[in-house]
Image (cartoon, rainbow, N blue to C red):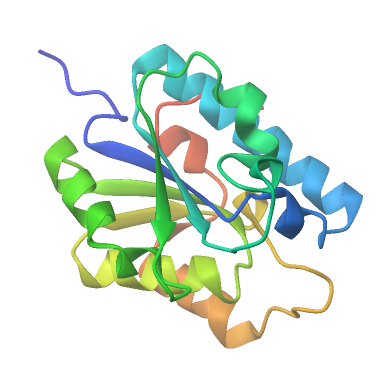
Length: 176
C-alpha cells in the first residue's frame, strides 16, 4: 500500500476558544481561520485525527469552551478529540494527549493556533522533546497584539520544526 503524506499525522489546534480569539486583530484571526478551515477539510477527506487543545477557564459559559470558533467547521469530522491543558500552558501537561497520540500511531503533528510565543511554543517544544516531528508555519499561528513575538522564539520554530512555506505539501494538501 502506498504511503501517504498524512500517514502517522495528527493535527493540533491550540487555544481557539472564543475568549482568546477575541484578543487577535480581525485580519490576523481571519487569515488564521482560513488556513485552519482548509486543514480541517483536508482532515475530513483523509480521516486525519484532529486534537483540539484548550485551557480550562472556570466561569466561562459553554460557548466560550469546547471548540470556540471551530465548532461549525469540525462538524462531520470523524476523528476529533478535545484535550484540556492541566494548569500549564503546555498541552502535554495532560497525559491524555500523549496517550492519544501514541494510540493513533502519530509520528508527526501539524500545529496551528494562537499564542505562538507562549502556549503553542510550550506545546511544540514538548512534542519535539517527545520525538514528534512538528510541522508549522507563520500562517498557522498568531499572537495577540500585546504579545510581541520575540525573535528567539520564532528562531526556535525554524530550527526545531518543519517550518515555513510548503507545510501543505508536507501533509499532502494542495497549496492555495
